[in-house]
Image (tube, rainbow, N blue to C red; front, top):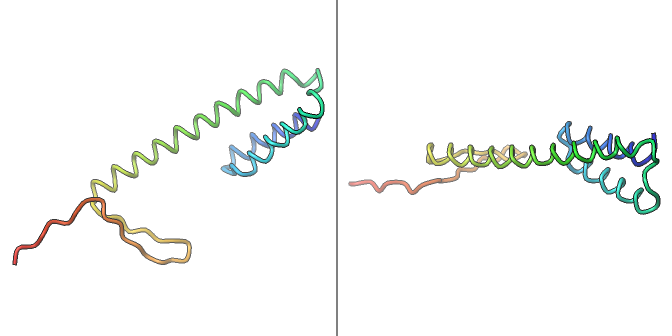
Length: 104
């Protein structure tokens, strides 16, 4: 397996495992290989298939992230408030809509 094909295989694996930074690094490595020499003739068809597959996976990831953001926004709006915790365990509240005033 050439460096071209290896980089694409690793990029696909990284994307499927939820490691976008590693995927990007491997795609950049693939581009660097292409700058120095074309993919070997025996591997070109597989490289094209992998690039197309990566494109489809990236589109699916983007659509999934957008859908998750919409769902999150809808849930936040319905609840009116959301409690979140950061990696250190600190608690934070976020208001999604104004609180009604109280009559005294």
